[in-house]
Image 1 (cartoon, rainbow, N blue to C red):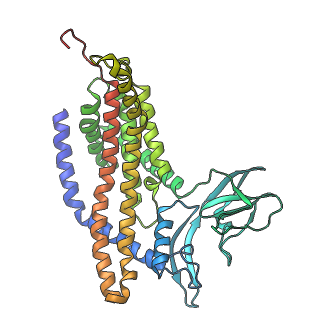
Image 2 (image 1 turned 180 degrees about the horizontal axis):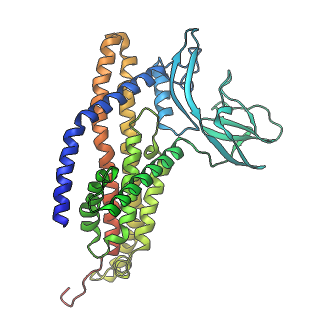
Image 3 (image 1 turned 90 degrees about the horizontal axis):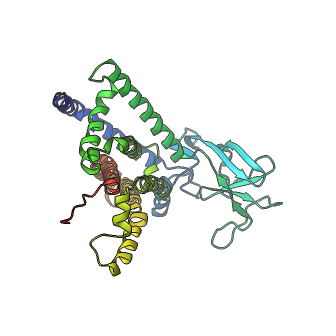
Length: 394
């Protein structure tokens, strides 16, 4: 039965690859074209000049890329100039949920619109709030405007506890919804027969791949099933968010250090909590080693499991995704920075070719980073749950 499923999945996978190659190419081209348009249009947060928010200079490009990589309380989709010469920005706000000195306050982020001084103070039920560098601050009692020092830090405001639905939170919820619908369809497909239909037929080869190529070899035949829910969740969660990050909407969830830290901590808690007695015995009091060396070796092992392994997980994912976004946005910016030397047509063509090439690589990286994170998580879990064989000859 297992062999038949593998044969069916192999045929299905090859068929899907052949049928969807033109679709993938068209999708990548559409993404790059959209990114070019969005970048050329700019956003109201990237420029402080009276140009309606267009991105024209090197400094504005750098600010735009930083804004794209950072989290935000709203979505800025694209900008355009109407017939009257006015610059219009298209997007939608997100809910702001903050805990202030006077309790919980909620409102839509559209209240934080920009004016001449760049900041607006929002009166939320007797509390004055302002958004500075994408962070929400509460003004001190009696203050009506934000005061800054020479380094542009607020001197009469303090941060609040922010529980807002930001772009990253929205992306996490959206990815969770897609996973819920996709795996729900897969479960319903198995109820109807041995071979699922619809979306389930696309998910099944990936589920089998995680099981047979990641979980079984690294955790072992006896215990891999216990950790399959987590491994599947983290694999599809990272993969979907990485793909969403390639769209012009502006998602960069896995490029946020807080997200990668949380994922790494989940893995660390799981392998530390699941560690067998044999694992802890070999870690804290290594057998077959001189007694004088056991204590320093135990310290090294503890530092490795508590700090180095989680750190390697979070930095690898964060650095690769952030670097990928930065490179793509920088290549798209060539059409602006090289417009004077090569002309608009040549610089746009060069930018398009390079950005398309990197975007194709990023599609592979999106899967590769999900695979690596899941593989390392399974490897660390397997090291913790492994049972060593004790014999007199050892």
